Length: 94
Image 1 (cartoon, rainbow, N blue to C red):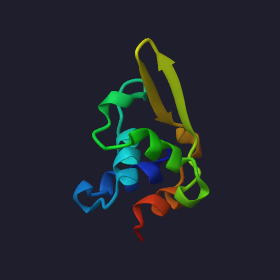
Image 2: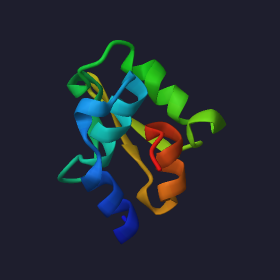
Image 3: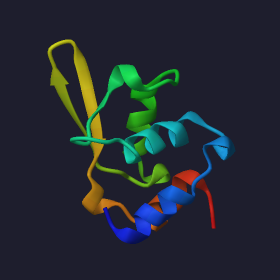
Image 4: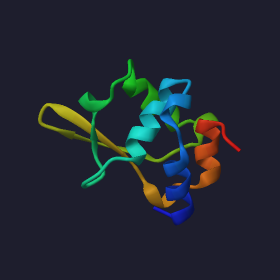
């Protein structure tokens, strides 16, 4: 992940989030380990729909990758495509 993107994510205040798209994207950005987030770990309604939203141009056209494992689906964002401008589309900050 680019340094500018890391700094931007670190400055985000989760208390200011106003929708579930923001919450889902934030969880994808702060994941640890191998970078995969289980569909069960999202604590928002309709997380799958919010992940689809993130792929739309209106929300930054993120490259959300999914893989199916035995009984769950895991997701991650392709970090090489991340830019601060894309993140601002979702988080609506200056």
